[in-house]
Amino acid sequence: MVALLLVFLNDKYYKLKRLCLFIATYLPFVFQGDIAEKYAVILDTFGQEIEEIKKLYQKCREDPPIPRDMAPISGKIMWSRQLFRKIQEPMEVFQEFASGLLKVLL
View 1: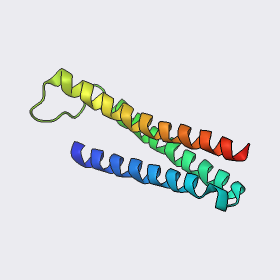
View 2: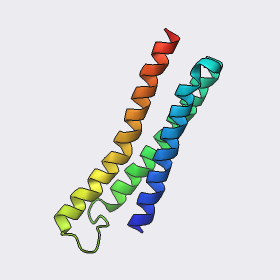
View 3: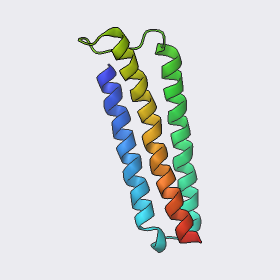
View 4: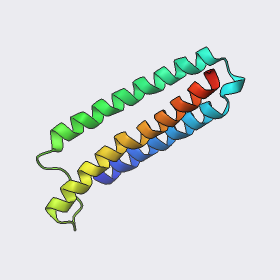
């Protein structure tokens, strides 16, 4: 079950990253109001994903799912770092995109 969750979250992250890179690449060719609107939708979707991660953390924080052959403490640390990475990596993409967007607009 943990593996399926990780595959699902990784897939969503890479789709989000590709979409942001696509938008950043074709920004000069697209009406910028549409870009800002799509960026807001992407941010809203990411906010919903953060809420899902928050619920998962609150549900499993006392007894998180850990791999079969891992020590309990290191498994808990790994689980929490994975959740943190699921939030941190898209945020870095958003920050890069936002700085690129500001350069084009200014």
